[in-house]
Length: 253
Image 1 (cartoon, one colour):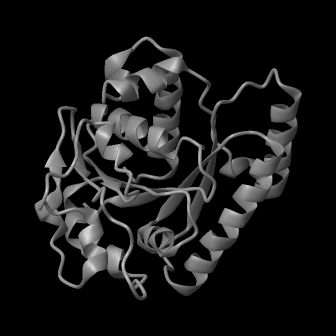
Image 2 (cartoon, rainbow, N blue to C red):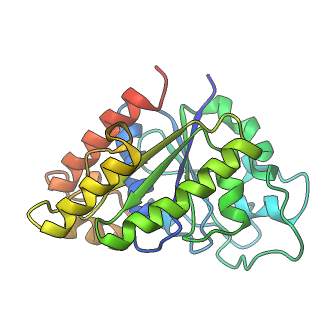
């Protein structure tokens, strides 16, 4: 078995990338898929969503960018949730001087991929070298986005980065799926934006969205996936539908 590596990315902030990473990982794990969450955002919030953070001196994913030879397996932590492990962030990471080799993360993750069915990389809202590293490591990209008019431009900018990496660094990067979040199609602007995204990127790239739910924020406050914090909430249903789509379209049986 070799894991399917999925980057959860958008160049815009506030699009629920971390929320998507945590709750999709929990849904996949509950179905028996072994999942590794890679917390590439130095805020470390994906790890905190599972109650995990790196202790001082402990290995983190950001060790990759400080020099060759980082053993990422040393940093992997089990969580309290079925089949989910976390490779946490270094919350003090402020970047490194000089260029980051774009394939360093892909090479460092390779020894881990045989252990998992899926690797989810949570990325920061940026267009810098860390995002390029995530795309260079991935087979598929999940792009959470809110449905307002600027979102179309943001997803379009991200898509250009995606295709640039796919054509120059990572021939294995084939898939891009767009995940609407905070979706409420009673709003005219949201319906119009969804129609424009569909026209620009194709219906096959649009996933069923995630509705607004205060339980998602409350669950983060308790450092738990929403599935285990408030299992009857509507966001749990939405993430189960997302899990169905990911298992059907992205993760091989």
